[in-house]
Image 1 (cartoon, rainbow, N blue to C red):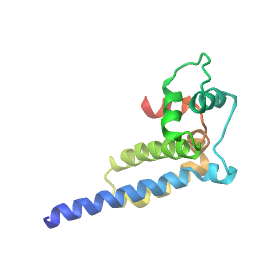
Image 2: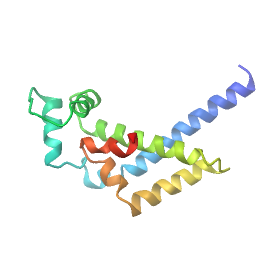
Image 3: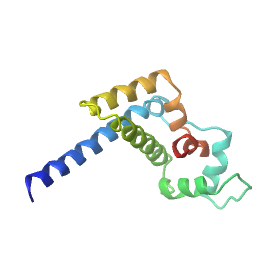
Image 4: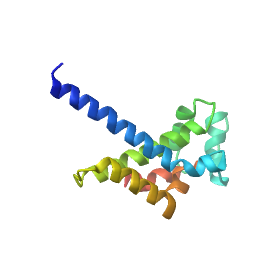
Length: 136
C-alpha cells in the first residue's frame, strides 16, 4: 500500500474513534441513570421488539429497529446505535466547516451540547421521535 492510502486509512480510523468518543459523551445521561430513558411511549416499541405484542402504533419501523438492534437482549444496544447516529451526523456537520482542529472542536461541541441542551435526553430515550430531527 502506498503511504497516501495508509494515511487515509489511519485518518478514517481516527475519525471513527472520535465519533465513538462523541457517542460516549452523548450517552452520559444513560450512564448516570444506569439504564436508557423510558416512558409510556417506549412500552409499545419494547413489547413489540421482545414479544408477540401487536398493538396499533404510529409506525412499525422504529419497532423493527428496536427488534433488530437490541438482539432481544438489551436496550443498551439501541441507545448506543441511536447515539452513534446522532454523533455521526454532528461530526459530519462540524467537518463541513473545515476547521484545522475539527476533531477537538467536535468533542468540545458534543460536551457543550450534552451539558446545555436536551440532545442527550432525547438521544438516550427509547422512543420513535429520536430520528425526526436527524432525518429531516
